[in-house]
Image 1 (tube, helix red, strand yellow):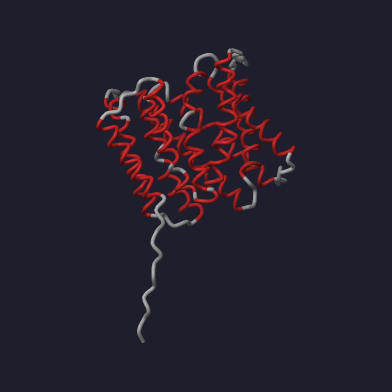
Image 2 (cartoon, rainbow, N blue to C red; image 1 turned 90 degrees about the horizontal axis):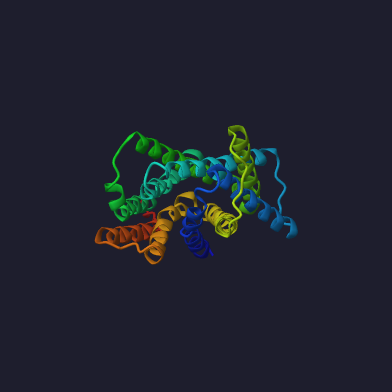
Length: 298
């Protein structure tokens, strides 16, 4: 079951870049994100109400859902979309892949969980692999003030993503399932973004062209309803550090699709990077050997 959820998350998030590309330009970024999570929240609430699986959430749970919506379905995306205007997408992918390391550290700080050496090693291999995969893009980009701003935003977005993971883990420990907390979190995220658009004077427009409409549907239902539910379920089952290795793998899926759709050419460094990413995946999911306590002689 865990493997199915993991592969589902990687495949879905590895293809959402196509839909995101189709949305950029016609509608304000914040408004597009609000539409995405507003639609996803409506779908989730409809499913939960019809199936009678919507759980009751107390005041503390609602506050955590609000915080999760702010971190995971609002600020996180605003940071990455804005950063993409100043730094290459490859650099954003490399920064985002550090979520594995941040999740391991945050789980240690907030929940007292032991940091697994194999997870840290796997995350490091994955980070190095992504750097090789995107090396031509990174090497050709010159450092500037905008680069530093983009890096800062990408890092802050990754920290928000990690914080959202911790909040979801906390909710699951309290017995709330990701379907319910995601529905509330996405609703809060959409409302916050809509409020931001109103306060900033952003025109509340929508693009009715088929490419925008169907990309919005894809991002809302497979990309958000299914993708985030599968991913956060993994966070509760496997731990946030292991689940976050998805952030390393989905750029690899995106590059493979790009090879067919956009003519991406695999190079020797890129293939070496792919090997490192796969090796990191093996390390992250390798079960540690059970320690055998030696018998003490009297």
